[in-house]
Amino acid sequence: MTEHTATPTVIPVTAAAPYDVVVGHGVLDRLRGLLPAGVQRVAIITPESLEDLLEPFADLLEGLDVIVLQVPDGEEAKNWEVAAACWESLGEEGFTRSDAVVTLGGGATTDLGGFVAATWLRGVAVVHVPTTVLAMVDAAVGGKTGINTPAGKNLVGSFHEPVGVLCDLALLETLPRAELVAGLGEVVKCGFIADPRILELVEQTAPEELTAGSPVLRELVERAIRVKAEVVAGDLKETGGRDGHPGREVLNYGHTLAHAIEKATDYSIRHGEAVALGCVFVAELAARAGALAPEVVDRHRAAFGRVGLPTSWSGADFDTLLATMRVDKKARGNQLRFVVLEDLARPVVLAGPSEDDLRASYAALSGLQGS
Ligand SMILES: NC(=O)c1ccc[n+]([C@@H]2O[C@H](COP(=O)([O-])OP(=O)(O)OC[C@H]3O[C@@H](n4cnc5c(N)ncnc54)[C@H](O)[C@@H]3O)[C@@H](O)[C@H]2O)c1
Ligand SMILES: O=C(O)C(=O)C[C@@H](O)[C@H](O)[C@H](O)COP(=O)(O)O
Ligand SMILES: [Zn+2]
Image 1: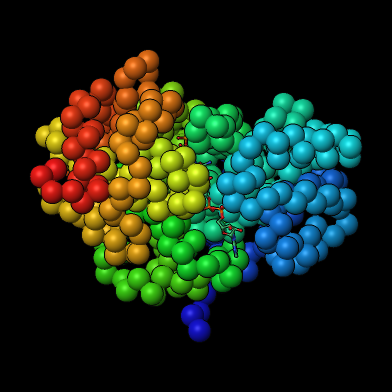
Image 2: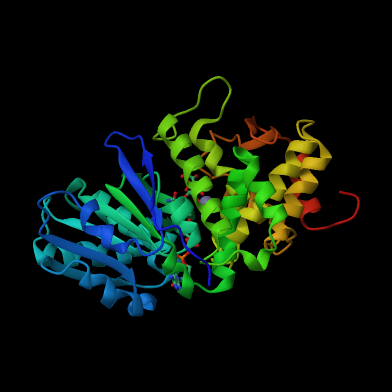
């Protein structure tokens, strides 16, 4: 058994109202301390699939008036019907601005629950308790909330910062391996865009050692949260960076194609898996634009592949993917924009790449010859 550092790590996030991300093992008893003072009623938004976690979790809020809003699992929750059902329940309960939402689940739950909290009464407090690696390192931090529409992923949403985030690594003990690995997709992304030490740790650690109790996993989680916190603090609402840095858009590295792949597969691919593919694709694109050395492109395939993520895919025709990429939030008019790297941790925006380069990069991702 791994010995856990007893002390939780507290990572502050600078925002309009600053908040803490608490990381550790067995830290759920900190939940009450993250709720705003004086809260008497809490709505827990959580997927039906996590029922086993729910009962002991709700006990932590003993003495408060607790409402449970069970939502569908995964992406099935990220639509307006589920959001509307949550609004209806909050209305029936007379949920007010002195009450608070607590999400318990993966990134789909924190996105949906955050969106409900952002929109109910134009904004009530939300604490996120992420239960996947992906939600701990990314979805629960930084205030992006959202739902999908038939046109694509996360097209409706808002920025609504949580008042606190509680990452209890013990919750990962029941997480299926494929979900843990998917979360590493966003971690490795952070390695490329900002913290190459993450890449070294991944390269030096046997992938099967990255388990819920592993100190290396904890270090990776904390490093990725620090990357996210720092980027978000510099550009809270993705309005732009400074001195050539893309600002918050850097966190979208690989996501233009990733979101198109998710839509094309009807969300049967995991977000973190799609991000791995999208990052390989933009690395190829950067190389074609003359920005990135081939060794760094190879390192993308090696690092994502090392943790067990896919690095090759050809499951949809390029024109279908291109049509979806045109509604990516980074696009401006007819022009597609991508975050690409000039080197490790040197991100820039590439605006309006040629269609030939985009096609050739997709061919390279597909593993086709002559790409
Ligand atoms: N808002 C943001 O900044 C942001 C950032 C990254 C990703 N996202 C979004 O997050 C979503 C992906 O999140 P995800 O990968 O966590 O997926 P998810 O929320 O769909 O969870 C994945 C699966 O794991 C199960 N699960 C969750 N916790 C578990 C646990 N502790 N034990 C057992 N099973 C558990 C869930 O029931 C689900 O089936 C996507 O919708 C993506 O767009 C948002
Ligand atoms: O927090 C951000 O900013 C990100 O881009 C993080 C991404 O990992 C995340 O998947 C996000 O939801 C994508 O944002 P979107 O604006 O492209 O919907
Ligand atoms: Zn993402």
